[in-house]
Length: 396
Image (cartoon, rainbow, N blue to C red):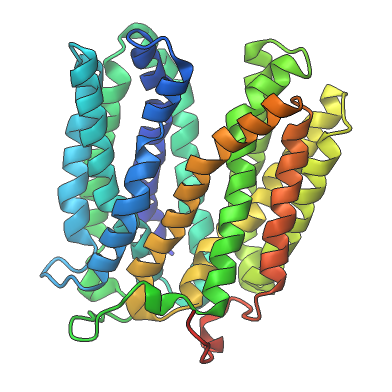
């Protein structure tokens, strides 16, 4: 698992970069734009790029063959470009240059995110992929925590510093991954499907369709809560902005601390079982929050929610990979990001409209209903999440 920890530096840099981007870029946009809706739209550019670019890049990487491997060329191009444009963002001179740097940075990130993620199953035996996903998510969580901690201190000193630091750490992460992982040596089964192309439609068997639907619904639930929780805290619970946003720390830290155990449990008991436990538990947590007014009870529920979310999130991507062929790992990675990005685009405005029609109490009712939909989809999956279980299925 040593190489998995080293690959984790790639996820560390990705998570750190996105956390800094999401924390500070809205402040830059707000100096030009008074409409919160427009600021919110511009901040979802990454999801639009992910919707179109990452499935294509993931599929393309399955059919790439160079002396550096299948995935590494995309890292070698995308990571330096992302580092440069991330560092340029705070140096904008107008709204036009700010949006231009944002677009270029998002485009660069889309070039290598799917190939970086696909490297994990490439270098990891199927039996250990839940553990490996726990490791890389743990490294990503550390990157997020570092961004909020050290990034805030650097920003107070000079607004350029956190962006420059993110760029340098991205280059350092590329160096570590490039020097430590040689695809043709380290990949479990290095195969490139050039003559027999891997097509996304060909991957949509019954298991994959229900799994992608489940992923869509639980990300709809998660993204809705994440986007609206601070407003829920201030408007429904009467908390200050800082106190409301701090509550989510209980959820995030619980997820971070349970990322590794969730991967080990998924390996021991099966990915599907852990996802079922997580989806059932998170549905109950979201439903219970609706009736809670005590802050201590809410903190406990958020901690439980983070644990259940780890059960889902750590085991879902390895499940997507296990349900297909080794030759289609990049393609399936792209499909995973397609549905999660679609959820991130749809959920915030959808739950916002529901809240406008009702009130903030409906936020967690909405989340619980979406988790129920996800749970229903998982219950319709016959596959247990083990690659060795491969059986012929009808493609939809």
